[in-house]
Amino acid sequence: MSGTETSGRTLVAGVGNIFLRDDGFGVETVRRLGALDPSRLPPGTELMDAGIRGVHLAYRLLEGYRTLVLVDLVNRGGPPGTLYTIDVGPGPPETGQRPGPLDTHAMDPATVLALLHDLHAGAGGTLPDEVYVIGCEPRDTGEGIGLSPPVAEAVERAVDLVLDLAARHAVPVPDPDPVRQKN
Image 1 (cartoon, rainbow, N blue to C red):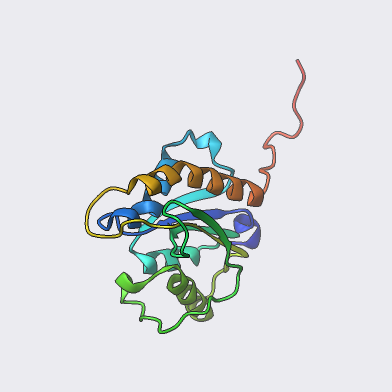
Image 2 (cartoon, helix red, strand yellow):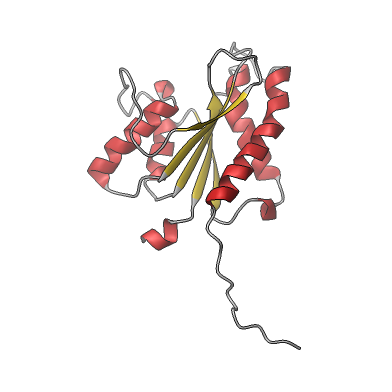
């Protein structure tokens, strides 16, 4: 793909494990975004339920996106359900010991972004210019299905944050019929 075809594309990826209670926050947020009227999504916005498949997300990003919005849990010490918008930027994140590409269960967003940089060096592709994380403070990440009440309540606010970020980074779609006939 050429740079003009990918220049306005935004990928919104929900990350997490739905079988670990609040860890399903990112997946649930993307599910809710997908249930919206498609006209509410800014042009060029694509959704991905990445779940725990971080390596799939890294390879998908090689298709070329201007903006990446990851939706996931973050632990920053705030009350459960607190939302954060983190501007990660385009550079490779600082990570400690990184698992290899086959260790998909240990691929948190920082590891996915580091893998993306490694893959880009070897395979080419266009790295996102903008990378954000919409993060939610968890209450319960024990085994089980379903979000805790404070995290469930944060999902709709997270949907609004994602829509706002995607709209700010969307490139207007040119009118296919710039010369309209007046009747």
